[in-house]
Length: 417
Image (cartoon, one colour):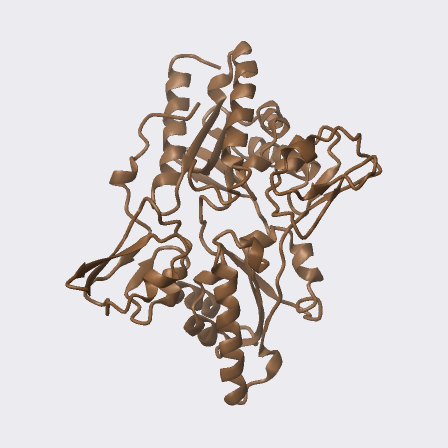
């Protein structure tokens, strides 16, 4: 059941991507480059007069702003100037930086980034994660590498696994262009490098019980039987959605950064920390488990994947997942048992799931509805909610949280536990 209340409707939300019509040169590059056909042109007598964004199709991938030669398309997420300024702030008072800019699709594990061949040779480095490196323009990359940066490593997803269809491919084109340009200008060849990487599932066959849940669930044919008693994962076909991880009863399928026991231990640790530092009766502690493609947080160099903020006397802990389909009922129960007052699961809108074959948002919704049926018998089903948002509407995600906070206050006012 989706939450309701004061949530702002999409029609009232501000779009995250906008076109400055006065600056637009009607070159139509954005129309041809958008992987979702979300940019539409208004023609008069075969002449392009105006370019508009169709909010029903836009995915806020950021490819169009990074492709616009007139800088007429603006986005609130990781805009070029924000990225450059952020790197400049990081370098204040320091020597030349080793910098890694990685796509979120590489997972949150710092250990995995360290293993990359282009990174493990670096003595010390900072990592910035953005949703799709296709949003990083050639000009932005050039500004960064020619500032106080000793070595810049770009880590996009594998081209075939880009969650925004064309993002990784476009970055590769830009990378080759920049390498050629920088070579002509006399820059060192190792100043700018690129290495693909994508997080994948792995099966510990020694503990597998051969239930075949993963094989039935995977719509990408990534789980292979190969005539064996236990299945294995084909890394060339795995898209890293994590649905199989959440279904495994033996907890034997792993994903770096999203392992079941790792998430469970983190939830318990955060809950204990919150209860030891705040007035429990005054504050509500809320866990938000969300798909990393439906919400784009502010830039941070923190190696912590999970952050907590205070909002209207509520402590909100944000736990990103590779897809809401990775959500596990065990983690929701653990959160409530360990002291969280409520859990909110937030995924992409039904027609916007980046794992299109498996539809992770619908998988998660079915799990949550089943769990709510059980929680209702304990009269605590009001502590669990699910909602679906789109990042192209700026306030859509925060609206979900505001609605949950309102519903919690109403429940406390009515004397519900």
